[in-house]
Amino acid sequence: MLESRSLATSFSRPILIGLALVIVVLLSMILVNPIQNLFSQIDSTTARTTFYQARVKPKQRGDDSTWKELAKHLGEKAGKKVDERKLRQNVESCKNAAGLGGDVSIEIDDQTGDIFLKTKMSEENIGNALDGC
Amino acid sequence: MQTLSSLHINTDAHDETPPEVGVALRIFGNDLDPDAVTKALQLSPDHLHRVGDRPNGDAKYAAYKHAMWLLNSKLSREESLEAHLTHLLSLLEPKQAQIALFAKIATVDFSCDLHFVSGFSLSPQLVNRLAHLCVGLSVTVW
Image (cartoon, rainbow over all chains, first blue to last red; front, side, top):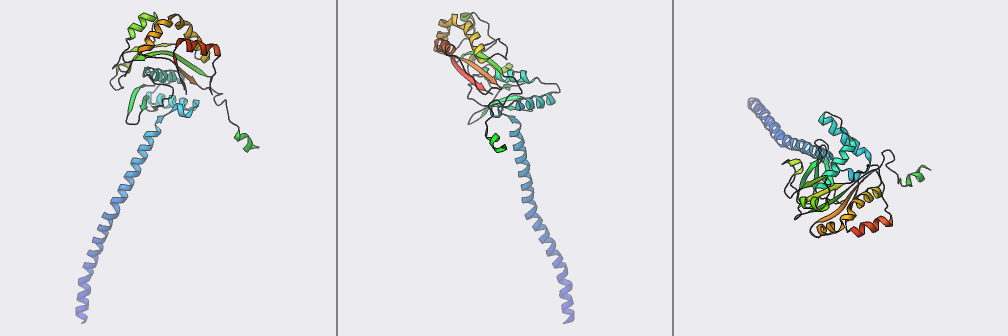
């Protein structure tokens, strides 16, 4: 009886260890993927947020700090000082050349200076704030 | 007291930067020949393009949907909207008949860009002159 119990114990220990390992592996498979997915979602959300934050809508802000910030950002990117007044004139020139009315909103990418006209279905790059049109 | 003052609306929010005004006459349309405008008005445009042209000839920009003839007001950007419009009107009123012809096939407007202003006002005389020339007004308050 004693022999059989010790046999059972000695037989079940590796099985228990094996089972524990299998459970750990399964748990890691079940939990790690969702966690990875969660992190990747956070990453993509952050990236998307950053992308939209990089677009400037001076018209909606209505203050000079937007133009100052835009000139600063573009200047840093281009490695030269960007004149804020010239920037405004360039944006006007592209908006005017595109035949846009005063009620049309545009967005300016603060990394490239590209000016975007957004419609319901798509967006168009109508020029660049550094170059004008 | 602080609550009371916070209720006040700041009507002069742009007091740090002086107002800037840019005004341009635009004539644009699908069937417009910009060279014909130059010839008819005897004025040199500051910008012109044809349908399908792209800004600065760069393929990364969207192609223009209209042909465009554009004349900027050459006044200082510190001048008022009224001054800019008056200046352009004095150039264009003698060409009223030609402008009326182009207005039949294209959009003709004064595109006005106002920076750091809360609003604008125009005198009755100027409004009357604008109406007489049959030119539209497109205002962007940035």
